[in-house]
Length: 197
View 1: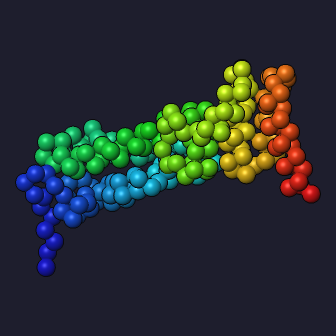
View 2 (view 1 turned 180 degrees about the horizontal axis):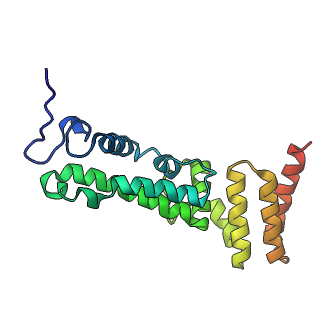
């Protein structure tokens, strides 16, 4: 029995996927379907196919390779012929581009990592930090201290307590009179001492 790969009148997809529809190359269809299915549960690292520790050039290369294959402009003919297929490709590409923007910006990436590790948030938003994390950032009066505290929050979310302490030490160097930051730094120092015993 042959599979019916025709689409319906409204531009729908057979079996709800691009795979087997013959609208795009098979390897692109499989990739788009897999990424589309993962959009609600996968983080930016997984969507781009890179490790959490990936450096900027690795992220850039991964994104550009995907963009060459999945950019919606390559499939513009589908916009009118098969709008559902085009929308699917477009949604996948937009999420990849969003991930790329976040992971390439150091501060956005740190905030994203904190939200991902602490709360399982797979997308970055302006309110990615929790109330507690935001309170800690709000204690800072200088950009240097704020960057160091954000880096400390990221390190803590990955369980890298020694690095978190070093970052808080930098925050205190930027704001030596900030007693609340000093209390947080002291708490982290005590924790590091306990886990190193």
